[in-house]
Image 1: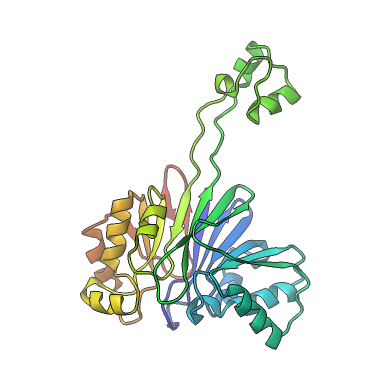
Image 2: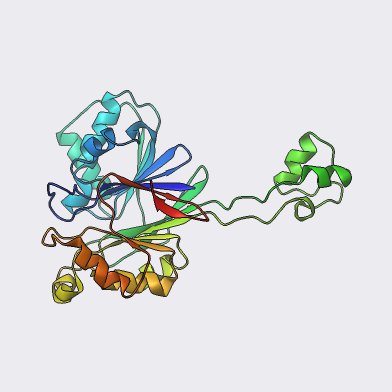
Length: 303
């Protein structure tokens, strides 16, 4: 199960209703942030998620609306007594950017920050899930990300294992961990495994092949939708996507749900954006700031 909390869904500049881009995903107790725009730490403080539980922060690119909330959040974690290490990832330039800002605006950070510059197909492993990067197409070095839960093992049939001669104790653990025990294989006493849930975050991008490849079969595609289809020319000029382009990608990839973010403040009527999208892909959400969704194998719903 994954929980997605939309901390900021706006584009370029904040509005009264939408903060800068920041999406939190929680798997059990660990939280991952995708982007960290200005004001993200305050959004976290008024949300049900704790910033002290953040295990990794993944920045898509170094435009200010996606990055400028990061230095303050790092310092607030330090001021709040964080000791656990933190992984901060992004494209080329993230390491210099973070280190430069923190050098001219020092704060008490008494925990280790592991800054990683990722390339296409690089992956970072966490407990129970993995985040991998893909190269998207924007007007500066930029990435999108895939968060994929580990597959969930099938149910262990204790009764059948006992009948086949497997003794209660260490042998139970061995066979559940994939070992063959006295000729009994895991397949003989374990149910079928279930694929973990997956979420793809496009970042800022025009439609591109690597995004389509990364989003194949995803449970949720979180796609930027800076422009309506009526402004497709503007979208192309600024290296962004339209709502209908996002819908076409979701349909082509066989995603279960499409969630549109990074919508320009020029659009007051978001129903218009949704209407043009559902003509192509039906299961569309336009999340509000601080709206949370729960993703399971059986259901995707706002909570």
